[in-house]
Amino acid sequence: MAIDQAPARAADTATIARASALYVNFGNGLTLRNGVAASLTGATYGTGMIRSAGTNLLGSVLPFAGANVTENKLPTGLTWQGTSSPKVLKSVSAEGLVFTGSTTTASPSSFGGIRTSIDVAQPGQTVLLSLRSNIGGLTGDPNASIVAFLFRESDQTSTMAVRVHNVQEPVNGVSIIRMKAPNTGTEGFQLVLSTQAGKPGPGQSASIGLAQLLVLNEPAAAPTIGSRYATPSYFAKTSAASNLLLAPRAAAGIYFLIVRTAEFGWGAETVSLSDAQSTIDIKSVFGVAVNMTIREVYVIAQSAWQPGWMDILSPTPDWTNVRYMNIDGSVGSSRPLSPAALSRMSGMPAGLSALASDLNRNLPTLGAPDVANAVAFNALRLSHQAFEADTTHYVADSPTSIGIHSELWPANSVAFDRDEWISFWTRTATPILDAPGNGEVTIFQYRYVNNVSGDSSALAPELSLAQLTGDRFALRIRTDRGLPVLSGSSTPAGIYSVEVPPVAYRPGQWNAIVVRVRFSNTGGGYVAFWCNGVKLFDQAVGVGYNRNIGPRLHYGVYKYSAYANRTEFQHMENGARSLASRVASPLPI
Image 1: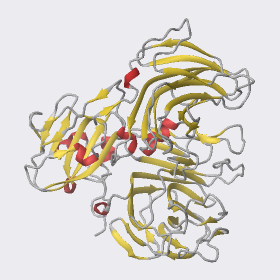
Image 2: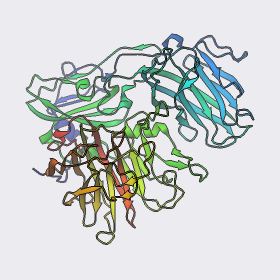
Image 3: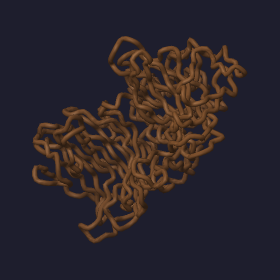
Image 4: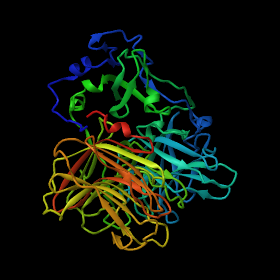
C-alpha cells in the first residue's frame, strides 16, 4: 500500500502531547496519558539519563596531578612528544592542560604535543577517544590541526595521524574518533596528541588546550543511531550504567517513540507493544551501548501521527554547515573544516586512526565544493541533512571547476554476500530542467573501492538512485559478473546494467525510500526497492564488482545537470540490520 503524505492538520505541541499514549517532560515533570494528567511515578523508571557502564582507560592518571608549570613538568602519566619542537606548559587543571608549541628548522611541521606514559590499547584492540580541544594564539599558516594516533615506543610502530580539531572550529568542542591498534607484537600502545602546522615552516607558534580525555573500549555493538553515541559525557574513572523504562499502558500496536535529547535534539524510532502491560526499554530500542539524555518523550500510535508534526515539534532548523575546504587552492590539501561537525552529522566518530594498510579506514568522509552551504545538518534533529551543488570549484582534491558533487560517505565498505539495507526520506524542490536524457542527479550510490594496485578504473556505481526529468526516480543496478574490469570509465565492456523503470516522486514533499541489496563479487546478488511504500523491484540480480572489499555508500547530490540542485534527507539509516519494517512504517516526519 502506498504511503500517503496528506498535509498535517492544524496542531501545536500541546495537541501532539494530548494525542500521545504517553507524554513526559523530564524538566518540569509534566506527564500525560492519552491527554490526561498523570503521575510521573509509574509512567517512567529512570531520570531520562541513559548511560552505558564504562571505564576510562586513562583513569589511573586522572584527575591530573603532579604537574609543575615553573619547571615545565607535565602531570603524572603524560610526557612531551616531539623533542625538536619547543613546548612550554602554561596551565594545568584536574581535567586538562594548556601549553604553547613552536616549529623549528628541525621540525617545521609540528608544534609538538603530549603522549601518555600508560598504554591505552593492546595489540588488535579498538578504542574510542573523546576530548575537548582548542588552538589559539596562532602565528604562521592559519590552518593548524590537532591530530591523534597510537604509538608504541619499543618498536616505533604508530597508526595514522587523524585530525581531531582544526583551528577553524569552535573552541573546546567535543571530538570523537576510533583508534585501532595494530595486531602485532605483545606490548601495548600509548595515545599521542600532537599539533600540526598548516604548512611547513619554522618560527610558527600556537597555544594548545586539551581537556576531558576519555578513552573507552569500543562496544561490541554500536547504537542504532550511530557509533558516536556509544561515547558518554566525560568521566575520570568509571561510569555506572543507567537506563529508562516507559510504561505507556497502551493498547497493542505500532507506536512512534519520539525523544528530545541534549545530545542531538529530536530523534525517533518505532516500537511494537503487545498489550497494555508492555514497557519500553530505551536501551532495547536504541542499543545497549547508547548514551543520551532525554528531555522529553512522546509515545504515540502510528495511526494517530500526522505527517508534518516533526516540523511542529522542531519548527526552525538550525542548519550547521559541514564545510569541505581546500587550503590555498592546492591539490591534496582538501579536508573537512570541522571533524566534530562531521561526526555530529554522520552519527559516527570523525575518523579512524589505524595502519595505512587498512583498506577500510575512512569513516566518515566528505566530497563537496568549497562553499558554505554545500553540506549541512539540522543540529536540532537527528539525521536531517541538506546537500547543494551548483558550479563551484575544488571538488575533493581536484582543481578542475566541475562543481557537481556534494556527498557524505558515512560508513565503511559493506560486506559481500550479506543483506545491506538503506532507508530514508528525501525531499527536493529543484527539478531537473535539462532536456530529457541530458541531465540527472544521483542522490545515493554504492560505489566500489579501487584495489590498491592495478586498478585504474572509474566505473559507474554498482547501485544508484537518480533524480530524472519529469520528477522521476530511477534505480540502476550493475555487475561485472565476477570478472573484474580494472580500467575504463562509466560502463565499458564487461559491465552489465539493469534499470528499474522510473517512478514518479512528489516534488517538494518527503518521499520514503527503502532498498535491500546483497552485493556479490562473483556475479550474483539480490535487490529489492520500494518508493513511498510501493514495491518496484524484488528479485535476484547481478549487483557488485569483483574487488578486494565491498562498495561504500555515498549520498547527497552528484549532479550531471546544468542547473543547481538542493536535496534534503531525513532519517537516513543503513547497515546489515533489517529495515523491512520501514516499508510500511517509515520513521515519522
